[in-house]
Image 1 (tube, rainbow, N blue to C red):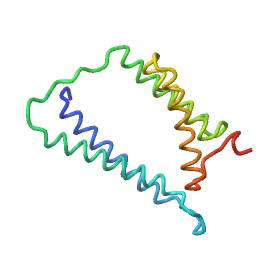
Image 2 (cartoon, rainbow, N blue to C red):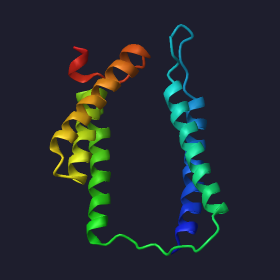
Image 3 (cartoon, helix red, strand yellow):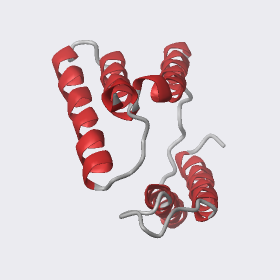
Length: 154
C-alpha cells in the first residue's frame, strides 16, 4: 500500500468500522430516564461522526480519478512525533480521573500544540485553556454530562 488512494481507502474503511463499534458499544450504556441527557449521547455523537468521516474518506478515495501519488512513509522524526502524540493521549487517559476532564483536556491540548509547534507557546496555552472551559461549561454544566471533575468537583 504505497499509494495515497489505497491508503485513504483502507483508512476510511477502518475508521468507519471503528465508528460502528463505538455506536454499538454506546448502545449498551444504560442511563436513568430522569437525566437531562442520557450518558450514551456523547459516545453516539462521536461514533456517528467517526463513521461518517470514515465513509467520506473511503468514498472520496474510491471515486478519485487521476494520477495516484505515491506516499512517503515517515522518517525517524515522523515516528517520534507519532510516538509522542500517542504518549500524550495515554497520559490524558491516565490523568482524567485524578485531575478531572476539564484540566486534563486543557493540558493535553496545550501540550500537543506546543509539541507540534514550539514557537507558539501562547497559542498552545490559550487553546488549552479554551478547550478546558468548553469541556467544563458546555459538556458538564450545560449538557449535564458526568465527566470526572478532579479538584474542580470538591
